[in-house]
Length: 364
Image (cartoon, rainbow, N blue to C red; front, side, top):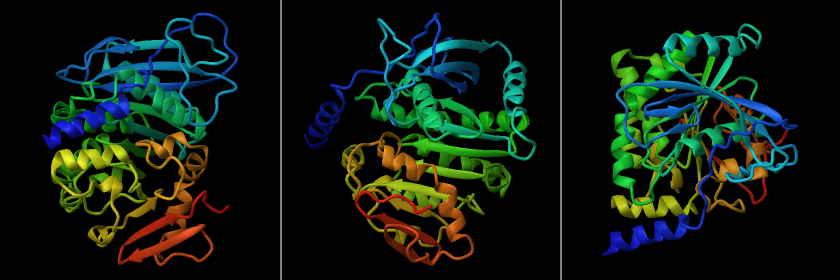
């Protein structure tokens, strides 16, 4: 009965939200363009359409989107029936790659537009109950809002995109590990100097499991391959998370967790899983004390009950964009620096927690 009520709460949290869709537009646009390279373990129908099923291997695509000039930070405006490029994100170009070599060559060309040594790729891994369209639109929004100086890559694993599909998605998250590892290898082979892994919700489980299996096969490969890892609202049991990273040695740095004790979706996830907490709403960093991890606690921020607060709020996007400054500030000295952050800085052995003051952003 309790789990049934929790599922009803999940439905209540999400039922009213329309599903974002990729919409093509053939006319002229005035917005800035954002290209997204895609690797997916869903069956691709076209570059802009995939089913929620599990595919036997990776498929590749590329989508270029026009971002409306007056869009507010964090917003993903769309209109499937009558798109207006002045107001909505629209697809201007798309391509499905028949061969892996074609994908790698196109990605290599995009990376080559940046100076040697600064060719960065950001791989985004979506979370639970996400469609193919939603994941592509999310990384496009993040890449544009954060002004990422690199190439945006999306890993679209086979989430069912259904609020009652939690169990299915957890199984798909395990199914998706090999696909993410293959995508990381393709990005590296294309010439990326730095790869940053950004994951949301259950995508964090996909990501950390992938790092674990990489290091079991070749110790140290995660640190060697990944320039940084950012987990947003991670839907992982804390004990499982610690055991996963026990096999990832050394841990890639920066390794940053965005958490909020007010995250409503993670509260319900914890109840469904019979555990008091998930990593994404952890209230005490003591379990992480032996890991060189920075935890950014968003609980005091307006909107922090949102499951994607770090990507939806203009204030938090400003903070999110300065994650490297956080790592540099604590590099070699995780005791914190007074006045750097408007909030509380707590260090327990190797782990550092930054509890933001209400409305706080990083100092310049």
